[in-house]
Length: 253
Length: 242
Image 1 (tube, rainbow over the protein chains, first blue to last red):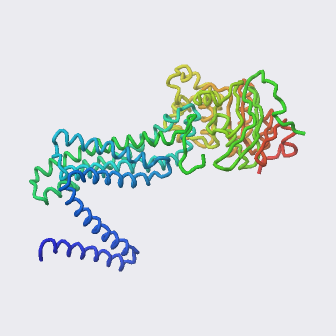
Image 2: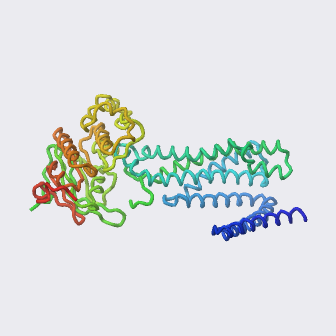
Image 3: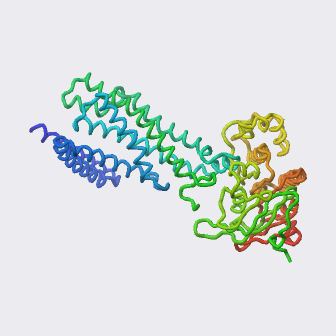
């Protein structure tokens, strides 16, 4: 059997085994597992074909990155739907840090300014920014509702709305960054991150793979912190009402 | 006949709150309409009415945590809508029904937000506020979040007092208390009014209202009637609320 055929056969067998196991254990998950697998197969096939095209036509790379930002922003925006302008918040918090960092890496020559290098780099940074934005935004929306009494207490003591929200935003940013820094700390020991694996499988030397992976991981730390900070700032603005009042998501104003 | 407060438009020499034609809505629903009353300094005004009648909502319009649809609230003759909200809320303090303790000690709670006002945050001022709320000096260094419900209520009162308010809004101060503790709160409220503070107390406890109130604002069917306690509390006064 050829290698591509073996890859297809093995992965199809594994997902069928997972579905069969779930069925036998009556987990009610078989259909979900199969549709998720099918969806991944279709998406990756389309992306594979598109990327081949994008690699040949550099102008399409810009459109491809734009679609990545848009998709990420819709996902993150839906997590804080309770706030007005949640999609705009997500676009800014994801695109600004991720695209600026990609730009800097290309400008200083850390990566070649080719679609082949730019798209995966931008993709990883956009994905990281998406995670940070979602975690921070969702936590803030939850805490705005759960912490309404504490916010009211601070406002009643003479705090500005912005100051009354500071303890919430600090907690949300810290809560976001802890798992993300854990991921950086465990790189190479607990997990072999995707960039490293991809480069090694693609034929790069392990030393090159490690260097590129480190560049991406460390860039991600700043990108994700900036995304968390931007999300906190924009949610603070969206939750602040005139007259030093705070909007509680879900409550009638 | 209870007189409508807005029939009396004479100025209040002592200053205080004047509420005129307030309409309050939550979303599309009008909670209260055409509410008028006066709460002069040195007096206790009780807001009475069944739960859901809008007492807490009305209280929060007085320090503009909520903004009314129509009408206005004057503080010493000045429209509260044009006052700086942070200044208004220091001058008109609010103690919530279940007060939230901020993290840290009682001292940190009392001095919260007073960093720019060294005099207000000074030890004697904190102790004075604590004493007014019926707590002794050793409480200053207790972790605030470990206090009992009754102690929290007192710390919240002291915390509002450290800001040197002219008026205090108390939301159901006796809700979780037995008769003896409620009488203690009544004594505290009366003493604060004697010191010149204006108090507006939302309560469903008519016996407590009868104990402390100089005037009563009764909320019913989305509007308010104000008058003397004897007129409005009627025969219900003296009976603990169910």
